[in-house]
Length: 247
Image (cartoon, rainbow, N blue to C red; front, top):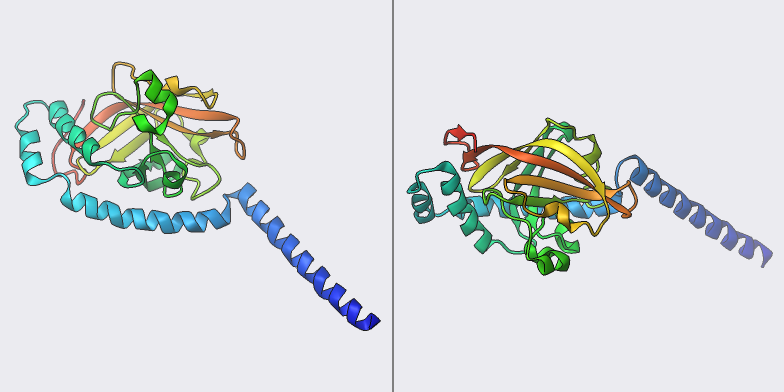
């Protein structure tokens, strides 16, 4: 009887030690890099978003829409026609394009929306409906090419942690948004650390800019780290088969 009890205790202690080591390993990976289990799920979701983006690029813009855009004299007006049409067909959780930040070796698909499910797939585009506070102010985040503020949020420790190194981005660095209708290059100007409720950082400022946000500091949602970048170059169509021009 005693031997049986001891055997059970040994099995139980071994199981507890193993579980403890797994927890410690998970914590260690999270501190050193990013949360591993959610990252696996995030990778699967990002893979699906990649496939969906390819399908989106095949159908948008349509030949008719492209002809209508090209009838405009100015590049900015051509891009705006496409951006306005793209906004109308965008849906929450669906891919909208790619975000590329060479400084932090980031090249991932961005999606529409900053709700929990959307941010599990990748960086999310702030829309008017993404925040009740923004909606109450009657001001929100535009799409690239609409001449206003474009806001994108991302995780730092979970679900691929695309913005983990957001604080490594420096003034002068480039952030590139490759949309199905055009490629936009923004040059970073400054950063701010703000309260989570500081929705004014994505208000329009009279020119097109990009605002990237993520929780700050790491492993905390007490504040937001925000990078601000100004639009410096536009190339019509993401494939880059048309000449670039300063906006």
